[in-house]
Amino acid sequence: MDTIVWFFQNIAMAFYNFGYAITHPNLWLNWSDGQAVMRFIYYGGSVQFFFVVFTAFLVLTAVGLWRNSIMWGVVRGLEGFANTVGRIAAWAGLLMVLQQIIIVFIQRIFAKAEISIGFGVPLAFDISWWGEELKLYNALVVCLCAAYTFVQGGHVRVDLVYSAVSYRTKKVIDMLGSLFFMMPAAVLTWMYGWYFMWRHLVTPKVSASDTLQRMVEGKSRAFKWNVETIGFSPNGFNGYFLFKVLLCAFTAMIFLQAIAFFYRSYLEWKEGPESEGKYLDKDVLGDEDAELVADIH
Image (tube, rainbow, N blue to C red; front, side, top):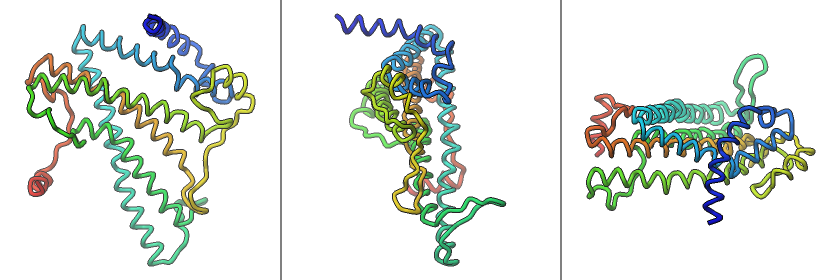
């Protein structure tokens, strides 16, 4: 009984917490103030933030059930966001290939130990730095293209039951999958990734076990930015904090895509087979690419 009361109290408080945060931005957006940064860190992985997001999802779902056109608009917006980010981030794959070619030419043919880019004051790093930095391009593709690949239907799906059931049963499975697998996995990853990221950006170190009072009144006094710049080798890539940022970005995009997938599955379940793929912006292969894919299969 106490758990039920706690649950609904947090939903009710979510409206107040959201309104208070919007009307008092200096308390958490003034990043020149250590207390504001500590509040931002604390609430980013807090129960309060979870219930603000959860309550927003409930309200948006209720409105969408009342007017399906609004729900379709949310689907189109979230899928469009995933597609846009993914299509831009996918170019990192080309940059990775080109940079690897340059590294081979500079190292093997010109026998240079350093690569400089730019004019005036060029960006100059050891060749090993550029070699390790290739991992960042790979991380960009993996983290920022995951939701885009989901929209495009490019993820591998283990099919044991799905193909044998009816259309509406498939949509029910999709809805349950987004609610009980995608969303909880994204929330769990966020909880670990959020504090993991900030432990490599600020000091003193923060953790999920810290209370708000301890962070605001205690740790904020010794607060300073301390962005991780340690590489795995003496002259290697030293921007590994970017991987922690990408982990949080990946988690947020997967959570948003889970919402879009749940809404799409519900609407396609309600409207029937004729609405399957409605408003879906999928990439189309050219004639030559389609023939190549057909030959491969």
